[in-house]
Length: 144
Image 1 (cartoon, rainbow, N blue to C red):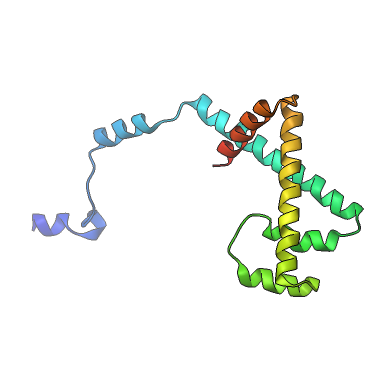
Image 2: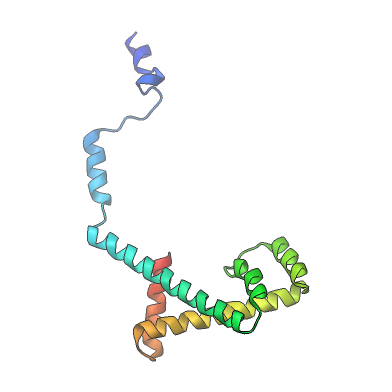
């Protein structure tokens, strides 16, 4: 009867039992210091802000050229992905061949990358390529 009672699902039957003192020790060893956590959140928000500002500048450039429709069609494909069929349908909507679409997407990504570098350069307040590269590495690490 004892064995049957302990194996009943409502009493945790079939579950692995963990001692509370073991769990407490594991919890303490996995803790991240509060400062580290706050710093990570801050860095991630900063990185996202840089990307958003660069994207907003890119959008304004396309608006200035009266080419906002193309930007809006290309923007969802800005992050590299393997959505071949989606690219084909968007290319058709824009009246472009797939090769022309990919070329336009390549140019958009290149412009975006340049604007991100410009934003980071402005943040650093330096034109030194080593400083900018170091800050770009921080940005990429914050997004991981």
